[in-house]
Image (cartoon, rainbow, N blue to C red; front, top):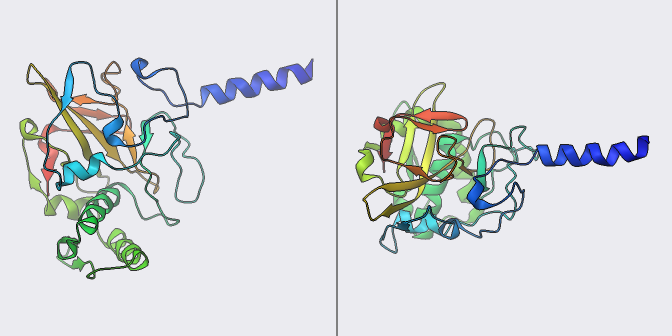
Amino acid sequence: MQANLIPAFMLFMLISCQPLFAQQYGRRSAANPYPDIQSLPLPPGYTRVQVPNSSFAAWLRTVRLKTDRIVYLYDGKMKPRQDAQFAVLDISVGNKDLQQCADAIMRLRAEYLLSQKRWKEISFRDNVKGVYQCPSAPGRKTFEQYLEKVYAMCGTLSLEKQLYPRLMGSIQGGDVFIKGGSPGHAAIVMDVATNSKGDTAFLLANGFMPAQDIHIVLNPGEPGISPWFRTSKMEVIRLPEWKFMPNQLRRW
């Protein structure tokens, strides 16, 4: 009798620890069938907005996703909470507690500019106006070392000052929701779509504390279209682990 109970208990634990996902994307599963951001399914009736091929918004759509939906911490351990994400970006978090929320956004911006060989534009500022400029034509090791210094010296408060306010009606890929301070938080708009009625939907990704995999967050307020969010009638942007106000939208 004891031997029969153990497998049943283990099965229950495995199922109960799986992330929650919107009904239209199938049953609860740790597997992710979508290879990149642009392959994620849209809400019914929506189409992706057209963006210039060399833009930050276009690059974000090409970011690869991991084949599972599990978020790991910088030390290799599973994040205790596994019900906040729809997918996980295939981007290293490193092995130090550095690449947190604002750092994840600076990482994506820096990776995009690096891919464009626009090294002079990879620059971030700290709270006392110190400037951290990326070396020209850096190798991967040099680039990673540069980013670690940025993560250590910059954060939500400094990044908020570096970005420019934007209205929700003009939201586009690469925009950032951010609240500077301690506590503060930041999330990046990974993709944007519209429908024939003029409604706009968008995807959000964030890192968190402690440093962990960057992930596409679920929309707890509208599970029927999750992980997409909609701008219409949105007074508060509620993420599983944070909330933003519309006036906290910023752009590079």
